[in-house]
Length: 446
Image (cartoon, rainbow, N blue to C red; front, side):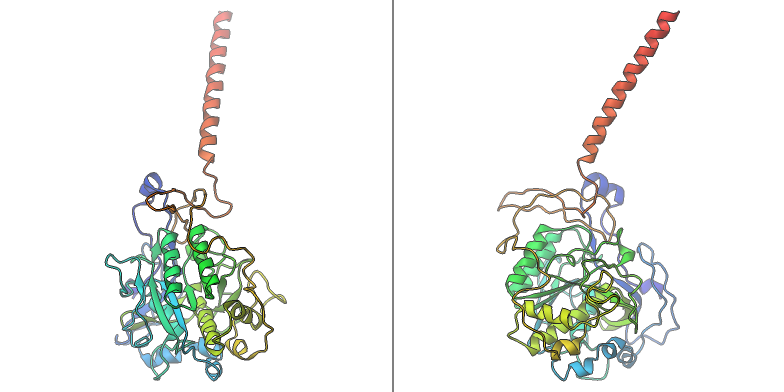
């Protein structure tokens, strides 16, 4: 059933046209999925994953998910994270979690009654549209899938409510980080206490940084994925996961303490969570196997929701600190570049005695501006590929635009082409002068 596998795909004009005509670089969501199928589909033979045409990612082998009771049986991450024990203390009730993604299908049986009216920043008519990709629905199910029956996907915070904010198009990407910034601000203004960002790219964005600061000042916890190697041109942790104050989540292999082989990780990594061998809800009523840091992040998001429900008066900075302080350490003692503080531990986060703090321990920067995005300088990104994007924004006062583009640190400086042409002119001039001198010398010797 390779034709049904959904992956990250290139979108828009050809590379040549993009290079010549515009400096936009898309940012792909972190999505690696295996063998999706509807719950009512007939029993299928095991499917071997292959590289989908047009998708820059190879998928691991997997079996088709054919029965909803099988779906429940295969949710190994709930046992790994001791969900049943955690639910004795909290189920996430009373907490609104924003899923800023490809949309959420609130009619999926596992999410019915869990999804609030949301915002569609991509669709032409606005409003809370369905999820054309399935990515956001999967993320939402991992966070707040219903636990009131024995079938289908159950989330780690099953009584939390999902606030869907669609920022990804039908190709599961966005071309402008401003749309994500707007989605974050809308979520904050509409009651979100935790925000999940299972998306990103290589380019920084001052607009998104300001929106995240807007969330922090308003006591919101923000979680983002670190990225997938298969959809990135570098091993640098994606943005916005590396923005100070955000909990950057990398992934683990199934039922192990080993880093998932597809994870991007680095100095900005904060926590890890299960990322492979997962089964997720897929719009409209099916299920599929998924892998990727996109699906590790919502498990940390759900844990934050459990904590916020258990301690409703606890400030966001203390919630973040509690998740870090109670993580189960992996690798070298203390925080390291592979696992961060370790794997998230919902039970410890809900029950451990953790000294209070006065600020988000991850936020080491002063506020860049809370009330608005504001214009900012920048330089061009150089490598237009899916999954490693820049933020070509036009930020300015009303009715005016200040055009600029952002790039990943260490990218090619836009001044390089001008310097190159200057060098070419000098070389041509020297070569011409040398040729003229040789010609005159030859004439004299005749």
